[in-house]
Image 1 (cartoon, rainbow, N blue to C red):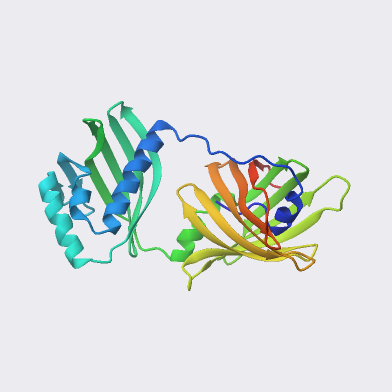
Image 2: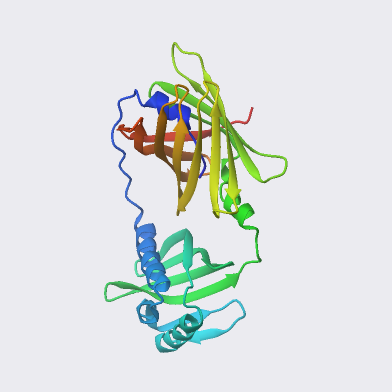
Length: 293
């Protein structure tokens, strides 16, 4: 999710007394789903066919994009063993889009799975057997190839629009738009603090094809500037930020942006440093969508 406060915010909010952030517990279905996904990804990326097969029910069924059906854990194991023999360095990334209980013992999960340059949309149903969640059915549909940059930034497209938050001691408003080329997101922000002149700034977010990741660059009206490297963890984006304040002081932090829905997200800042000195974390701040101006 996209960037929110930038370097200027980091410097200003350093003066505010904050409470350490605590993540709210995940809903039961999401928690169960993520636990299964983590186990599956770990086994897959180790090339461990036996560990993967153990995550399937005895009578599990897998259906590929071409309609090929593989039935039974033992047959699935055979196919996985052959796959890893030919693809020793295969690496899997999974993005869970939704998870819900159909019954107390049946869990339905939908998401995207990427191996190399191929992405599939999958639907997976789990059954609870002897206290364990096992894959009962897994169907995959291969998606057409997509430009990596467009896909990465497209995941942040929900940020386009106007936003506002009222953090302690500072009100921050921002507007995010696509550039004409569609290759960058541009965020304009204003920070208002009582008794001080507003600080304005611009942040440009784009895809680095060399590093294979999202990066951002920020400039504020006080003369501060910085650069961030983005990573994604499910519905969270972590912006590892390094900046230079107007007086030349170096600052760094990790800004965590957590998507709630299309009208709301949270922002927090951890691992903060200024001139080599550790600073308190900034607790979660709720950011809400406002009517476009």
